Image 1 (cartoon, helix red, strand yellow):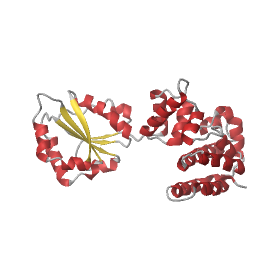
Image 2 (tube, one colour):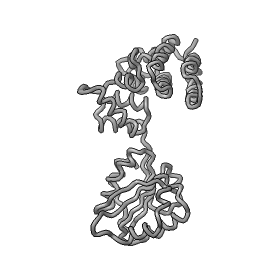
Image 3 (cartoon, one colour):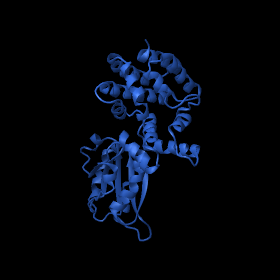
Image 4 (cartoon, rainbow, N blue to C red):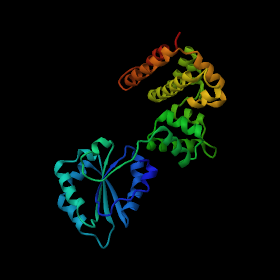
Length: 314
């Protein structure tokens, strides 16, 4: 289910242990209020790692479950990496799950729904955050313009915690004015010398010399190679979609389908025609190799020069 659907979750009152499949840290934090409402009453939540939970004496947990306090809130534990729980702790949880009107609730947090199979407790699965979800979240939560939100997700990915942190930086940088695409380049990719579309324009135009110049300036300004690679991947995906549609649809429709700026539609469509299908298809393999290389010890500047030559060189 989507996180928005989870907000309507209504568990059975007699259930005390739940399996929560959620792979986004920010959504996990925001789920506390949802669980609190779902449980009813007054609950205090605490997040603990699986090892910490295993170290809590069984007698203490059972006392918490069987002895409601007259002077404090009921307790709920969110146990992260719960797929690593010991067998003996699972047996204890089965006992706790059967206690009527327990004053202790346990939420077992795991990141993969496959690990929930066979646990024997109610399972709640929150769908992974997709690009469209993240863009919508940025526009609704932070009031970013759609094109800025889309560019930010394409640059950073869909981790909401990271996006939230970077948006706070962008808002501080922009001050009273709205955040612009240019701000993402300056603050995250740190491209002071070139506009936000110059790398994409150079790649679409198959201008190897210009591409190397723009990308080298980003590296000189301190941009993370993996962030830059993410921008190249985004451009290559747009090229792939555009190449499939150019000649079949109008330039505006091609740009909209590929996620390229509509006001650059004619330029984008013309750029798609300059690339050969065989090289576009093989380019994804080269990009995957680059991702692996940058996560080891490859020299970014040298590797990018070779990568760009393979992608767009004559």
